[in-house]
Length: 111
Image 1: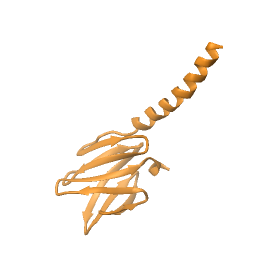
Image 2: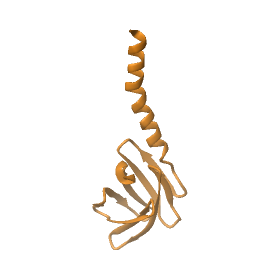
Image 3: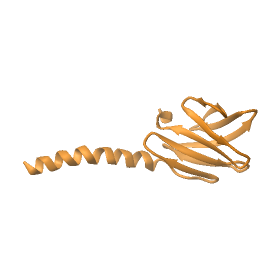
Image 4: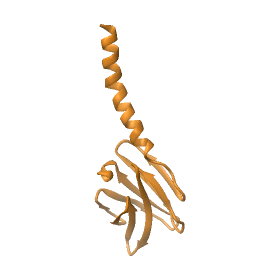
C-alpha cells in the first residue's frame, strides 16, 4: 500500500512541478531585456534604443516602437499594439520611461 501511495503522491506533486518547470524554461532574458516569469505571466523590461528581444513562453518577443502613447511589440511573429495605459490581447504595458518599456505577457499568448 505504501508503494501505491508513494506513486500517487509522486504523480500528484511531480507532474505539476514538471509542467511548471517546462513552462518557465521557455522564458529567458535576451539582448537588452530582463524577464521575470511566474506560471501566469512574464514581466519583460525592454531597454529602449537597442535591438531588444526575449524568449517568452517559447516565443520571441521584441519591442518594435513606442509612439503617440502606443507600444508596438512583435510576439512570435505577430504585431501587437498596446496603449501605454492599457492592454491588448492580454498584453499589458506596465511602464514607459525614457530608458525602458515594461510589459506583462500572459501565459496564454502562445495559444
